[in-house]
Length: 171
Image 1 (cartoon, rainbow, N blue to C red):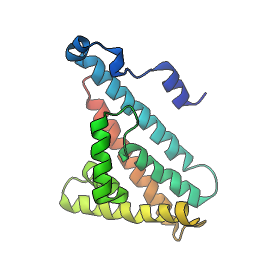
Image 2: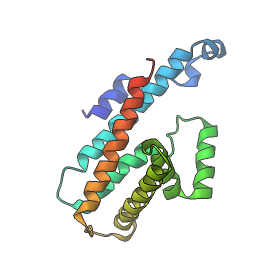
Image 3: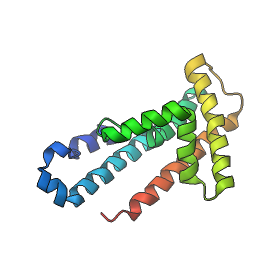
Image 4: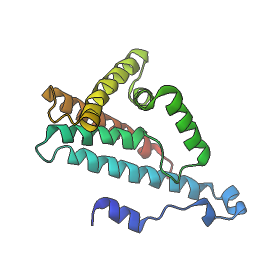
């Protein structure tokens, strides 16, 4: 059993249907705990994909795995997410494009000032273009070995930052 399967089988995320209106109004801790657990599962999944990027011998596939980490952390939320947030995500994707939306989210998480954010945005877009060449054009080799290293570093930074936020949570 994988770590993800263990988490999903042992920690069922509460749904709004599990609570009466009165409980929803008064039991904020349960809702917050469910959201925190959902973030734990996303981080666990991201970690598994990052680990996968270190196995195997095909650098192009390892690149896709490393970039998938960022898509897990910053892409559209799962089906459990509120409909309104999914609608906002779809609208932002339509207006900005998926790459720009992900780049923006990553830049604001990792960048501490405007020039940092611009640098992270450019870095992500550059790496995402390589990932897209692999996925959509069947590219089988990376032009530079540093592309995979840079993708892994960006993924590790994002996971570390998300972990720090979770450590600051009250529960």
